[in-house]
Length: 248
Ligand code: NAP
Image (tube, rainbow, N blue to C red; front, top):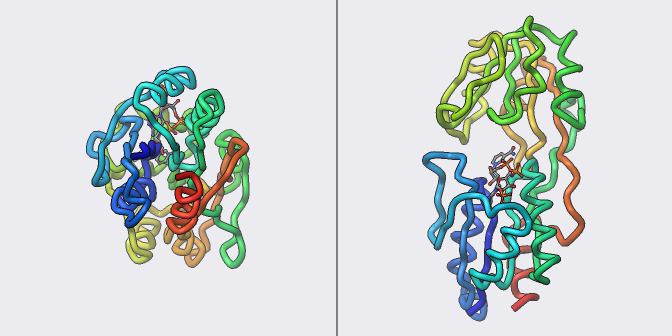
């Protein structure tokens, strides 16, 4: 029996963990452990063994890999979870544990145009001429870069009440869990009189908020994905199964 650690925290990761636990034939010899950072009080949990909380840096993760007898690691954390990705790469190198990054392709700007930026700080700089009412659709963790923009009003969306205070002078928090359809996003943009949308390029199926903003002529500022550590990358369940087969 091989033990597979899936570093999760996204809908894709939970789905992957459930599917990896039910693989047929030779691959049914895999025992899956799904790991969460523990940020969400009511996370989507897959149908397999789970664990919650940080490992204590790369060293902590390396120890965990040995203690929990992990043979393989799939890093399926969100593309913006750059610290966890770097720790996973370092710990797997140290313990010679095969690792792959599961990551959907980043969205490409074609019909829907956006202003592409590389950081939260650059997104904040681009905001000045783009209107007062901002849908800051990036979660609740990385808002500090926007805290000096006291003349702006921000709409923040979250699945649950943020654990920490929001560092923005003027804002509204909307609690709702996706997936959302385009009509919902259009109504939201219109009813909150949004002038500009800020999004992270999460990749995969393009978020319908982008189409809704585009149709309404609302400018989009897109924060592009941070660089990933070197190593193999898969973007679908099929590619993941191929990778697992190769490592059995
Ligand atoms: P991060 O900045 O890369 O990670 C910070 C620390 O959180 C890591 O060093 C690690 O602590 C712990 N951690 C992160 N993911 C973990 C996991 N799956 N299992 C155990 N520990 C984990 O990550 P983040 O941006 O805070 O994201 C945290 C979680 O939220 C991830 O699971 C990610 O997939 C999910 N998420 C993130 C975003 C985003 O935009 N960043 C969006 C949606 C979901 P130690 O160093 O102590 O091991």
